[in-house]
Length: 260
Ligand SMILES: O=C(O)CCC(=O)C(=O)O
Image (cartoon, rainbow, N blue to C red; front, side, top):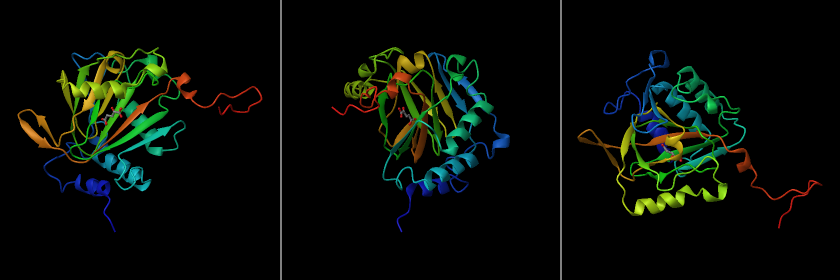
């Protein structure tokens, strides 16, 4: 039988992988730490939020549901009602560890219901990345990215085409913008190291005026050293704007859909 690389990676993320230790062993000794970025308003890095044991449990559930098709598919999206128990667990964990509290995240978005209704799970093999982008205008302010399994560098660039909260949905093709920006080889203004078990929260300027991306390289520069990447999984949590749900065919008063 073919070995699932994600499963293998969970096994390797334990004690038998001494070159990438996780500094906390279980949730009861976790000491979440919150670093507001000094130059990017609204960006906060929250470290030690999810213990190694809990990451393994999350990954076991993701693997059990075969979200990444045994490692052959690198992205999965989930819209609307979430029957995925681990997403609800994550939300509670973030509340319990103050990730979603003032001053890191504003009540202007954290008191909405539901807090999140869209999630993306990304699987990165060493060498994989994501082009610099501002998340689409179809998502509300207040975006959370959770890192699991291994560390990676995330870069931040001033947005070439900032998104506005009230932008029409049609104007919000951030992926195209970022593809273009990659071609001219911009240097990131800031890089932050996302350790496994950490969370970043982006709101206001961090969400609308800065692009974030991960370079397609197999090693990251950490201090003076190049560190080889391993398999990483991220979970991005967002909320769709109300008008973004209106993507289906027009429905007439009699309830019949217009399929033209
Ligand atoms: O995987 C990450 O850490 C970033 C994900 C992201 O930016 C996205 O899915 O839009």
